[in-house]
Length: 222
Image (cartoon, rainbow, N blue to C red; front, side):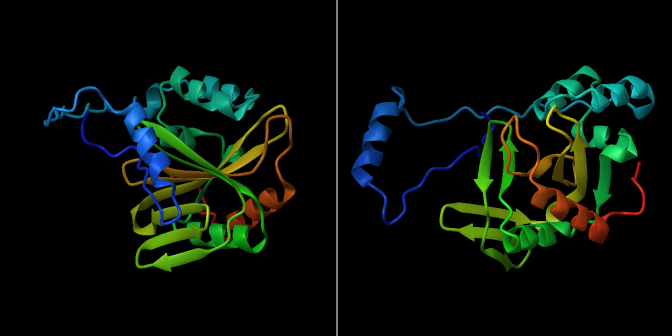
């Protein structure tokens, strides 16, 4: 344990306190002595230099994708970080966006009532929201979704790069808009809501095209 927060569960005014207490009792650790051994975090190794990547093989493997879930194994096979893969990808599958596109994307999704999927993760967990969003609220450097059953909080000043990413699947091309911090770590990834076996929502695809037109950078930065 390095002390990095992974997940938090808390009670709200309408919560069932007795049910919560029962869950705590059921899953309480047997060892309750004070004290915690905090380990040093693992030091990440540097990415392989771009020149050593089998770019032709990587490009063909991207073209041969059949499912969005095959993307991570592709990165692992070619020893790529995610942002390195986006930098080296064929232009038809990626487009870098200006970092301020988050606000526009969320507002347009809310205005058009386009149901989306949001993936936010850390080393120990990935949280996923599926469905429409409504209340987009800005407060200082934070852009927030403040819906009754879904909250999202992103500091726009910590966004390092943003990309449209297009992946082939058996159901057609699937578009995502992905945000990374200045060290290349993923902040959040947005898709149109869909299930395997279904094509991407037309409304999401139209939204992506509009965001690309407004926020697409002139060329992919290497």
